Length: 147
Image (tube, rainbow, N blue to C red; front, side, top):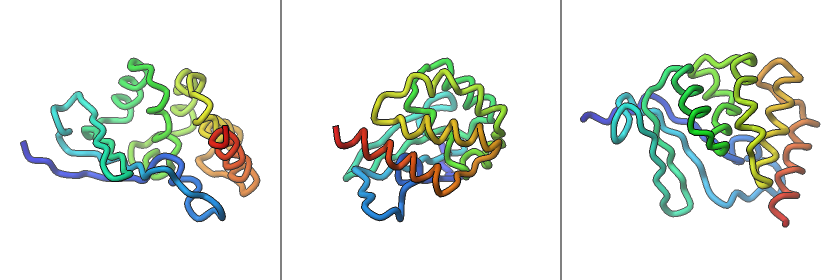
């Protein structure tokens, strides 16, 4: 199999809070889209090494991403949809994002900042945050990390 990268994206808290005074991520998260996946067309995989998580997916269509993640029911997977560059890459729009609410509803306390971002995007009808919304999401992130 020939492993060819189609695209890669910074995901996780760094995708939103990098550059904010006081933000120190516990790790780096990268999402890599591979033409043929890593262990087959239908699998995703996460490699962890030296404070970096590399999440690898095959080059799914928007519908394949959504359907597989909703079927898996793993709420941690919803964060990638909140990264504007990933959303653009797969052609995700706000109506599509709304379909992912079941995953948002299952987020744990440490990822409530993603719920805030999700709700802001829905309210703004676009994948943009005002400074105030970003600050509120960051406050939510800090509050969960201090527990």
